[in-house]
Length: 348
Image 1 (cartoon, rainbow, N blue to C red):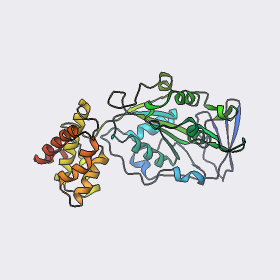
Image 2 (image 1 turned 30 degrees about the vertical axis):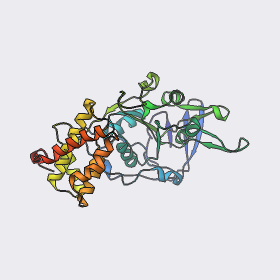
Image 3 (image 1 turned 90 degrees about the horizontal axis):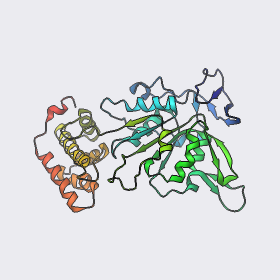
Image 4 (image 1 turned 60 degrees about the vertical axis):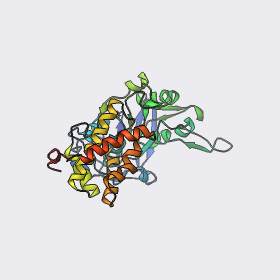
């Protein structure tokens, strides 16, 4: 079976295949495969992504099986079809960008896509003080026989999804070295290893995620123009519930996952929606995610009062500043004291 460029397999193999040959420009790479077999995630039909098979009939070597996400919770959106859009972008372009505020589920959905596709996931947080040695590799000890690949080089050799989180906090030298990987050249030059040229695996996909560039997100900067142009599709994320708009699916999720009453679930989502509205106005530095609400509801289900549980979760999570915490506290008290609009979540 052969892959050329970004093409798809010509047909399913009729027998076990021991070797996969790929051709990229003038270089020929032989890739060892442990075995070939069908992978069929039960979530493909749920998210309507049967047409976007990212790794047909290919099973990655056992050494990377632990990098394939498992048991990722269902992702709930409000008709945005994020999973389908991401898998479609990867199917056609092999790379895409996700942009949206913290807590909107960008990382969660990348894990879900990797699990559905059965692909290993190589995750790098660009906001950390990660050195180029960690990303690309280095020699360990004396001599040139003890080379250790970094994460990006490991992904390049073996394929899967390279996930670059907080991409607009990436160091410029790292972004520059990634550019040849993301265009038609499809390779990386290892300066650290006698300028070895490594071709991008034919099943190597790239997803970057980032918060919108603003002064609220310390360390962010406008994405380098050359790097930005190499992202073929951009998908914008937002919260399920914001301001007066309460999403019934978010209420149902909190209610079912955390075993709280419908009334309490509506109050919590209402409070979160108001906090998100304040966050978008710039009044507070952080807005609660669905996971933050779930943490709040979990403590309530364990017998702690709604307000006491809020102190340990959404209020403390927002900021260490006491003035900001007091602002959040007032919003939470107001939202949970009012009679919830149960009609806003009538089917929850």
